[in-house]
Structures are given as structure tokens and as C-alpha cells.
Image 1 (cartoon, chains in turn green, cyan):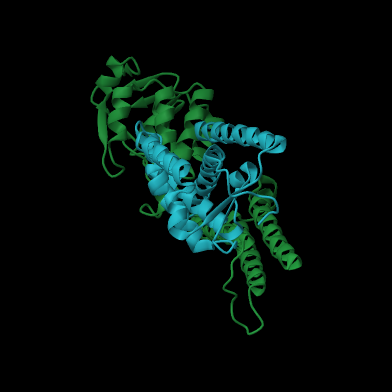
Image 2: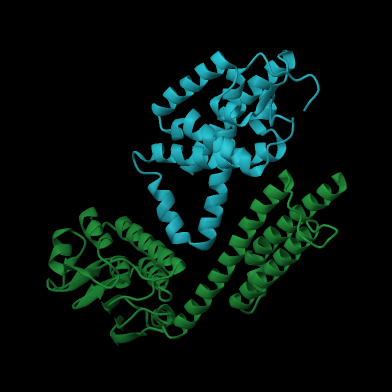
Length: 276
Length: 187
């Protein structure tokens, strides 16, 4: 009997080590760097995890089968804690499947989200008209490297937050002026507010709202992604001097709506200057 | 049944110490398991739920839920092994009238009875009243109501130097768990 208990404990312990090791090792940056596709790595990780989980739980159940082939009714303390452990790992396995599904649909959505390109409008003036997508930042870098941008004019309803933040950092680092004469909403504001100086028309419109995931918006992971995107966006805007009163209203504005602040308001807040 | 253990004299303070330690340890463990499963399957809802527990006034709900979860796991452990972390340290064993373990289901039922009648659902102020009432019953009759109903027997390791050391360890461990849970929550 002690031998059987020891074997059961060993099965649970080694399964736990293998499963945790699989998730940790195959999620690591080193391994991700070796893989051509992050999605393939994710799928591989999930598959290995489930193979270990199903094999180990089967091996455990084999110790609960009596001489007549039926499951033993008697449960001991090891069975109780092993059961709790396996429930946790089954939940984690289900989570891995949901994670993969979300990442897959997100990668497909990103393929269709190239966004607009920054184009050269005049002497050292760049222009972004349209959404911020996966190729927008690259186009900004390319135009700046080729022509040396001094001013970036923005007319956009927003787009991908991560790419907008990259553009914001680039604009700030390279001390590029930003200008808005029409509309600059959502992720676009992140770039506008990062310019060396922001020039606006009094009737320009700056839109604020909560972020939204680009895929599975109603799923648990989609909602979490939206929430994290919103937090990132609002923290950035706060660090750039956007007042709490505006941020509070923005946080109460759903992703499918927009709360607008005019260029004149930004000028009165000292965050922008009137276009001469 | 360990040799030399005693049914009398009763040790209400050791039983109380064991109960506090078990509820804090298994309550934290239970919440960890619930959180682990909840976050794995539904991370957004889990985040909302656990954020709610950080609101003002929520510590009372937190205490009630922790006591409930802790009681279920403690009951299961006692039912399957006769003892638990707290009871092992404070030297207490719970068995049925035949001297055998009481089983998983009965163990959980017993501890839920303790949660209701002994701890007052973990509700502050109410629990003070129920704990005192249970203490008086134990002192006057030699057993608690939930044990008397089912003819369970509670045996104690004899008092001695070793048990005093273990009592101190148990009390320190209780506070370490409390601090650990608070620090983890703050992180």
C-alpha cells in the first residue's frame, strides 16, 4: 500500500513538473526566437501539455482500478490532493486552448490591418491620413530616414495601440512636430501628444474612448485585451499631461463611441498651440 | 488512533488554535486554487471578481468566503486522514465512535457545521458570539454540539514540553500565513 501511494504521488509530481516545464520553457523568449512562427510554437506547446496531462491522469487512474476492473470507491488523502492538482491542470489546459484560439484569430485580424502609410506632403512634412496599422510605423521610419521629417500631420480615427505607441516614441525621440487640422482620435492622440510641439486648429477634434480588441471582442480574452489596451493608453495619456477630467470621461466612453475634445480646449489646457 | 492520546481533559484553546491555522492555510490554498482555475478559463471575469474583493467593505465578504472554502478543504482532509495541518501541530485527532476516520463526506459536513454554528459563517461580531457559545458548550459538556450529534470523538496529544513548543510554532505559523497572504494581495 505505501508503494502504491508513493507511485501515485510520483505520477502527480512528475506530471506537474513536466506540464509546468512545458509551459514555461516553450513560452520563453529564447525558444520563441528559434521558432519561425509563434503560433506554431503555441500549438506545439498546447499539444505537448495535453499529451502529458492525459497520459499522467490515465496513469493515475490505473492505480484506482480494482481486481474486478471497476474504480475503487475508497479515496485517500493523496487522491484528494491529486484530484485538486489535476483539476487545476485541466483548467490550465483549457486556458491554453482558449489562448491559442485568441492568438490565432488575432494574427488573422492583424493580416488585414495594414493601416495607412505616412506619405511625404511637402518640405520635411509627412502626412498620415487613415488608420494606424501594422505597416504605418515602418512607413514613418522610412519617410523620416529618407527625407528627415520635421512635421507630421495627422488625420486618423486611430488603430493599433502598440504601433501608435511605437510611432509616439519615434516622434518624441526624433523631436518631430505634430499637427492636427481635422480629426485625430483614439490611438492617433498618443502620437499627436508626443510631438515636440502639437499644433492644432481651434476646430480640430481629438477623440477619446476605451480600447477594443481587434478579434473576439466578446470573449474573456478579448475583453481582457481591451481592458489592458485601455489601461496602457490612459496611463500614457496621463503621463503626457492629459487632465484627469478628460481621462475620466474617456474611461466611461465605450469602444464603439467617442468623446471629443476640441483643439481650442487643448490650447486652453496648454497642451497645444494654434496653427499660425 | 495514536497511542497515549487522551479524550479528556478537553483542550479548547488548542482546538481553537488548530481551527484558526487550518482556516487560514486551507482558505488561502482554496482561494489560490479557485483563482488559478478562474484566471485560466475566464481571465477577464476573474480579474473583475478579485478586484471587487479589494473594494472597501469587501474584506468582510473575503473573510466569510475564505472561512467557507477553508472549512470545506479542512473537512475533507480531516475526514480522509483524521487530522489536518493545524490539528497535527496542535495535537488533535477526530475519529468516529469506532475509532476510524469519519470519511470525506462526513468530514466536510462536520466542518460546515463548525463554519455555521461555531464560526457564525465567519461574520465578524457574530463569530465572537458563536465561538463563545461553542466554548461554553465544550467546557460544560465535554464535547461540541456538532461532535455530540454524530458521536465523533476528539483525542488530544498529552500536554508536555513538546506540545507547548508545537503550540508556539502553530501560532507563529498562523501569523506568518496571515502576513504572507496580505503581502501577496498587496503585490
